Image (cartoon, rainbow, N blue to C red):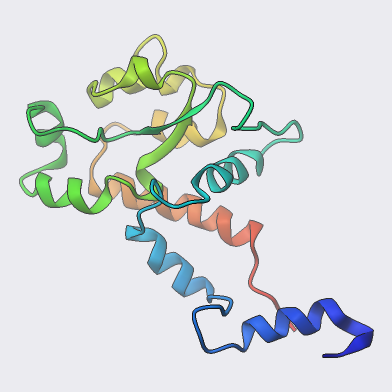
Length: 171
């Protein structure tokens, strides 16, 4: 440890570790976030809050606000032909792989109203994403369909922000 530069010494220690405690590269973060189960991730609220607050000088607090986490593609689509058709012929695989991922999650105050509604209703309805003042919901509101490509595209957009918030250290 360099006593004159203690903070950077600690950062370097994490960057150069070889175990799971090391600082992951941007590539590793991007790859992992494509399919990582964020919904069951212990810090999911913190992550989504940080993404939303990246845009604001007046931050929101998910612990005190009336917001909850919403699955854009619903958790149960077994009997929902509209969602199955939108996801395509391999809908079961897409649903299984992308349900709890970053690209399919957002925050809203209208979780109960959205529930298992169609994507069109979730976007255009009275409490839909087009009427949301949250930045996290803008890219959803601009989408015509919600499928594997849309989820991957949104994951990439949010990952870009994550990599700005938590930058890989440079020395």
